[in-house]
Amino acid sequence: MINRRAMLFSTAALVGATGTRWALANAPPSFDAATAVIAPDASSGQYTFEIAERMTSLPCFGGQSLPLWTFAPGQAFPIVRLKHGQPFKAAVRNALTRPGEDVTIHWHGLRIPNREDGVPYLTQAPIKPGEVGAYSFTPPETGTFFFHTHCNSVEHFGRGLFGAMIVEGDETEPSDTDLVLMMKDWRLDPNNQFLSFTSLEAAAKAGSYGTVRAINGVTKPVYQVPGSANVRVRFLNVDPSRISEIGIEGADAAIIAVDGNGCDPIPLGTWRMGPASRIDILMRSPKSGSTARLMDYFSPEPIVLAEFTSNETSMREDAFTPAPLMRMPYKIADRSNAERIPFAFSSTATGQAMADLGALMGNIPIGKLCLSKKSLWAINKQSWASTDHSDSGPALAALQLGKSYIFELHNQTPHSHPIHIHGHTFEVMGSSLRTAPPHRADTVLLRPKERLEVAIVADNPGNWMFHCHILEHQESGMMGYVSVS
Ligand SMILES: [Cu+2]
Image 1 (cartoon, rainbow, N blue to C red):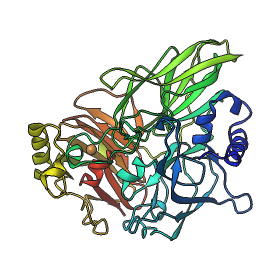
Image 2 (image 1 turned 180 degrees about the vertical axis):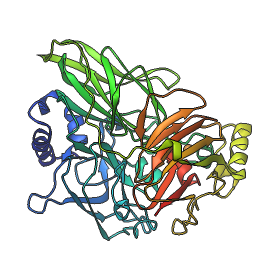
Image 3 (image 1 turned 30 degrees about the vertical axis):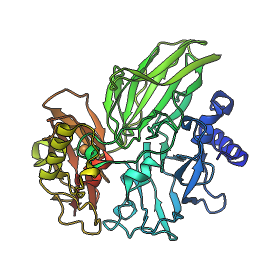
Image 4 (image 1 turned 60 degrees about the vertical axis):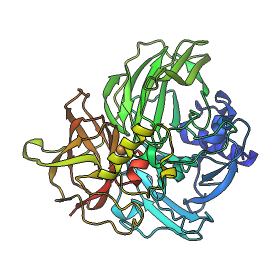
């Protein structure tokens, strides 16, 4: 569903947003068409999203068109690029036709006012089919973020309804090329038709994994980059379920930001990250004519996610010393006076029974056993209502505005859980299983049985979701909220 107008439109936006070094001719057409930088209306400055089902043929669909849910015609997973300090306004029309298919847009990782956070009932009324909603905020920090709906998320992500939001202005030394890579796999059968997005059995375990791996809708895309250049790769794990362990072969690379937050450059060995996590990598591309590979080592066999092939231009001759990004003026938690709050992540009795049953019966779909869907997961023994999101129940914790806290996160399950907080970021502290270099994040991957601590300043008032970002876990109970007042 790529039309020529959209292509031209995105070319102009790309060059305008990132400078002439970002030449469209340098990238495969399928990539650019599928992940276009979108621009607002020229006179009003407002972005317009019209969420609708559109038959779309992504390169990884083997020639098939599939009913994706997208934000605009001709553009799967759009990219919004803003300058730091630039206001953002969007009108969102829900043009989905299925009755009850509400939407709200959550701006993931952005510490914006609570009323703009896009959580149905908790922060706003859902945008029902046929209705239009509006968002307006100025991103307070630079970084690599994304946006997605917060309703029926398993299916919405499964149909590709997400986009990236890049807030520029954090580079102390400009990079030569800036790429956005969104990793999202697709659940397709051998005929390249959608498989069901979820099953009770998978929801009670690690979640439903995609069968076709892809970056920006392309299996193993090849990016043409300048040789010996500083290439910024903004890598987003926007998969509903997949844990990845990211590394680069054939080039020196360092992590310069985690979840958009600049950090002391961390030489990139491998970095394990769950759904919703992002890293910004600065890579010194190989010499002209050579290729570097973006790898996922978490799979049973390491797999190549993407390739970077250096063209004949040679940019730099100096040694690779990645410059740190500008730091945003976050309030730093006062750890010595912080109040400690334990959060236990567990399966419910039903969830445990499902997992046991799955282990006992192999791959028999649980649906065939006529068991009703119940809450499978919990935070501090409290399960988010899986069917009625309008009943949010009490907060998991009431935080005092301006106060420092240490959250003691305890994963009591044998599965990994990427734990995400809205409206805030936390400093990742110690863990019972591993050491992590100091960094700030909005989503932290809890490994099986791990105890991990994060420090946080409750500096944004409102009710903020706190949940696992394996979407089937989130939707079957591992979700709650904290209040800040
Ligand atoms: Cu989880």
